[in-house]
Length: 330
Image (tube, rainbow, N blue to C red):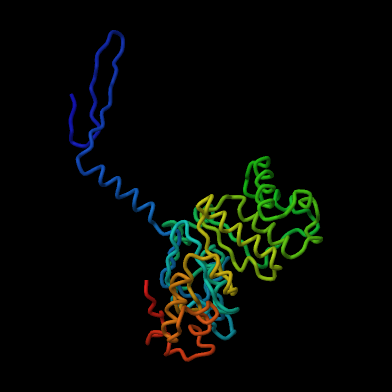
């Protein structure tokens, strides 16, 4: 007997010595549309959502990352992240541009589960970073400007140590290390040098290779080119572009290098004193500030940053009345 009500039905066929069941699935007419909609939702789902997030330091309400309980303190309060909301699309290189102390690194630590938000919510591919911490950690990795190593060990020993912690196949991990560092311009023979003998730029390339061992879907780069020479900086920037093009990796990048943000990022959020003051494509930001300045052409990224952070011109000339977002044309 066969039905067409959308549920599994079965025909029971009798044969000598056995009973054979054939299963038939009949979909109702709307099912293909529903499946297509679900597939579209997955394809367009944001990689990262930061929803009205607040982080304070030096207050009794500050939650310690280990105990997750408020810790008493007498230090003056600092509002490091002030009600920030933004979305990063899957496959996007998203830049967070701001001066030192503006809240960039605090925000990236909140995303990477190293800090706990006092208010608001952070989700990575739909997973809440507090409720699903372990699952989120499997989807992300972070490369920081203050990357730490065992300096007496070689680059390869450091990387294989990390691979063992991640419980990766060592043979595959070794091959991946050689491949990534080669793409970053580090020759294979240098893998056997102690880290303490390597330049700052080379150490940062090793840090990037370590961050890619787990093939993260979301790569968090916290000022990855700070202090690098122009050649090393170019190597890293080209590799980030290649990583997105070939692997589809989503990149969340913090930087105070305006040229880097302009060159690398699909969209840029400018952060100042813990708040997002503008968010658009590099071209959109430059065009908007150029129009506001009545200039004959688009502004430079430096002019954009100086205007939006109020360092050279008054806030009211460029920012909305609520001091929240610059009105930028799409």
